[in-house]
Amino acid sequence: MPPTITAFENSPDRGKGQARDMRVRWALEEVGQPYDVRLVSFAAMKALAHLALHPFGQIPTYEDGDLVLFESGAIVLHIAERHAGLLPEDTNARSRAIAWMFAALSTLEPPIVELGMAMLFERDRSWYAERLLMLQDRVRIRLGELSRHLGNADWLDGTFSAGDLLMVTVLRRLNTSGLLDEFPDIAAYVARGEARPAFRRAFDAQLAVFTAASTGR
Ligand code: GTB
Image (cartoon, rainbow, N blue to C red; front, side):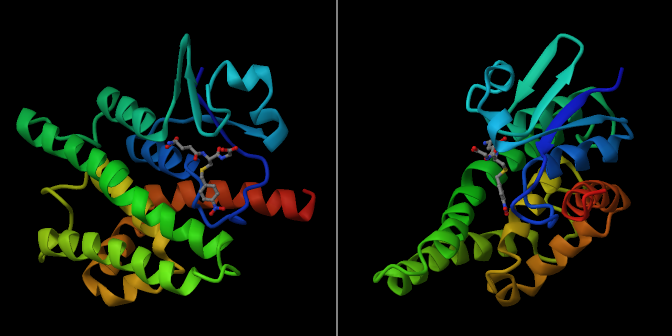
């Protein structure tokens, strides 16, 4: 039996691959592991059956035999540890790749998500313009640091790893912010990730869910 992941039945991002099942799908595609997807509605996510899998009533979850996991980073790490292709063999390089996974989720993702939330939900507030500048600057600082680290390299630490996979999915959330235009090297890094065949397969699979939901097919 292949593992089963959960994803939005009707993703609010309209198939842009911004929901966090995308990173799990991409990891599974990179390592060539087939998977099943169980689509869940917002109501089903808060029902007891789903809360037994995910204490916070969210997607994605991952079920494989008697293993149940939640948290996209933990799921990607689990996949990377059990299959070749997402973590280097060398012990030190492996630890550095895992450090980049943490960096993506705990250093880059929080300010990027906060900016995205403000742009979505706070536009009509009197203080929006001032707050937007502050949130943009916080992200800009991180992008500058990341750009300095990347230099002319294709990936964060040698070959493509689960660190790059998570970093690219996090940076994609800036697609509509305009900030990536200020960092052409980071925009090129994101484009390199998006050009990987495994990314394309994962993206197309989640887009097909949205297309089917919106056309009733
Ligand atoms: N830390 C957890 C993880 O990494 O797995 C966070 C999981 C999470 O936030 N899940 C979201 C969810 O289930 C979906 S991905 N939300 C429902 C809820 O909390 O009730 C977040 C997301 C949603 C929509 C967009 N979008 O429309 O662009 C982008 C990202």
